Length: 204
Image (tube, rainbow, N blue to C red):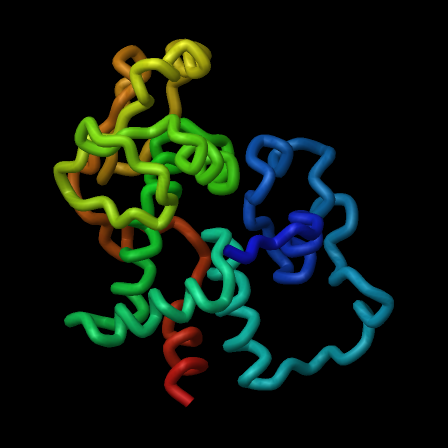
């Protein structure tokens, strides 16, 4: 599977906002976006006016990069949401939030989605007692997400940590496991995303 191997901070600068791709570093003075907020490249001060298509494209790219997906993966979520009931944009975001790597991040186990994805692929996470190493695994309400029993020693630092988690998940830092209490709603997704622009882009 293809992976982005470039500099993460360039993505934040290109989208003009913090995507929090490097976890705690993004909240410190070392954050590249705070030091150099302009678009990377020699033409960063070039064309100022952005077309309607350009606005839609940037929104799609920003959302894709928030969740760390490649184009083919992201498009797959859009078309799956388009076939489902309800508003396509909201359904797509809910599907993205229910990815296992995102839920591990939301529970505070990983400082970024990239780190959470690594924990999953390295076999540190179980779902309902079963080993799952697929970051895109679609979690459901009632699923129990836990640190694998023989990996708990590596996550002992979590016992001193009290993460702030959204209301639709819970995480017990002593037992090192959490629950998906319910599927998230659009109001639960705290990312600055205008999903209708993505729908307009793919509908052309």
